[in-house]
Each structure stands twice: as structure tokens, then as C-alpha cells.
Image 1 (cartoon, rainbow, N blue to C red):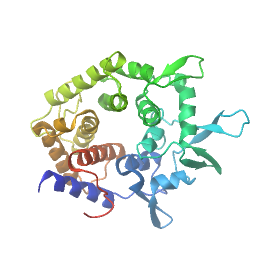
Image 2: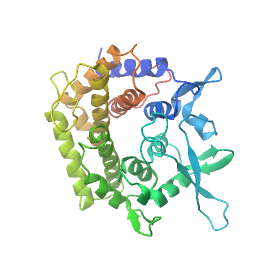
Image 3: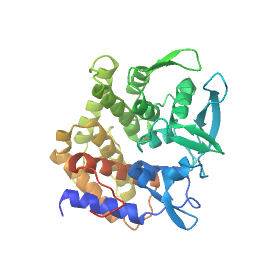
Length: 328
């Protein structure tokens, strides 16, 4: 079986047979699934299958999806921001600042997309503007998901005044993220790298140059790519210590989680030509085989769907777009 067919086999199988339910699972599990399959990702609700993203947009209740009305956005007091509340460590709610906004942004939603919460209608832009206001409140200085969401809708030259009265900007967030240690960051720093890489991609697409904070960002990305290859295992999997040092595990779930996160980063950060390199193809092939080996094993949804997202991105970039909801 060639790599394209192998990718389609595991991604279609995961889409069709890894079922989640609004009644049994929470936002943590369900929105990770939506990250991989976007608006096509289905969940069970009241005896039928529905789009998880559309269910939320239409005001559906979900464990771990907690929100709060934010600041007034107009002088008439008719429009407000929407704050998505964090619930770190619960494995039900939002585990990182702006994580759910980043997931929804990657589902191709427009800025004016309506979102119903407790009978009131907001938009994606209302969440975005609340995030801009709340940026100084991020005590962990973890802006990985913030960057993903903001750069989906704003130019990378964007600047704004936040709740501390200071001027913030996309470049300031990139600089903060680029200065952070990967080893002490979530999932080996892959999320920081993804946020930086997505911001850099947008910056270049908008005619920006690799200079200043963007040069620092690019250096961070290129070093991580080099380390991923340096510590790659003989079977094609990536180190269970991510970018810090070599490492491997006999636990299939651990290998799927670490290799999956690294592939997700690489598919965002690398050029089309780089993704065709033998060492990358070997990693993707090994990842597909890990999916096959764990096909009937319950897996933690964060690991599973970040890995699936990496494979979806690789499939789309190397072999073209396709829907996994139907056979081709």
C-alpha cells in the first residue's frame, strides 16, 4: 500500500470508528476531534450524529465548554466580548489559554460567524476582541493558541491596547513565545512551535520579511526541525523526549502522542519539498502503522487527535485535499 492510500485508510478508519458522544465525553475530547476533522467531525447526540462544531455554534451544551460575557464592545452596550473560561488539568474544559478559540479558528470559521451562548448571539470576532483585551492576564505567558487564533483573523502587523493600558502586538507575542524554553512547555514545546510557525507563515504570506522578531522565530523553528531529525529513532518515530534528547518507549500510546505532535508541527513549519524528504515520509509511515496497531485500543483524545491532525495536514499538503467523511 502506498503512503497516500495508507494515510486515507487510517484517517477514514479513525473518523468512522472512533465515536464520541456529547453525553459521555467533554469539550476536551470533542474539540480535539474537531481540530483534526474540523466541521465534518461528528458526535452522537440524542440518538443521531451531528457536527460537533455546528452543535456548539448553535448553542449546544457541552461539559467543559464554559463561557462568560466579556467587556462592552460598543458605546451603546449592545455588543459584548465573549470569554472562554479555562479549566486547566480537568481533561474536560479548556486546558490552555485561548485553546478552544484556536481550534475553532482552524475550522475555517469567518470572523462574523455567529456563536450562540445561553440564548445570546456572539461572533468569532467578539471572542477575538476579548482575547486581545485579556492578553496581559495570561500569567503563564503561554500564547501558543493565542497566536494561532489571532493570526487567523488579524494581519501580523496588528497592534492594540489591552486591559493593562499597554500596547500589545502580534510581534510582541511572537517574541515572548520564541524566548520560551521548549523543554518545560506542554507536549515538548510542539504547541509553542506550531503557534510561532503559523504566525510566521501568515507574516510571509502577507509580504513580511524574516527580520527582527521574525528572524528569532525562524531560528527557533529551524533548530527544532534539526533536532527532530537528529533524535529520530531508527523505526521513523520521533524521540519521546521531543527536541531535548533521544528517547523511545515500548508504550504505543506514548509513541503515538510524541511522534504525532512532532509531525503536526513539521507539517505546518516545513516547505512542500521538505515534507517529501525520506526521513519525514518514514515518520509519517510509522505514524500510520501506530494507528493501525492501536486501532482497537482506547486512546487519550489529545494524543490521538493531534496525531490525526498531523496526518490530515500531511495528506492535504502532499497529496491534496479530501473529505474523510466519504470514500474516494
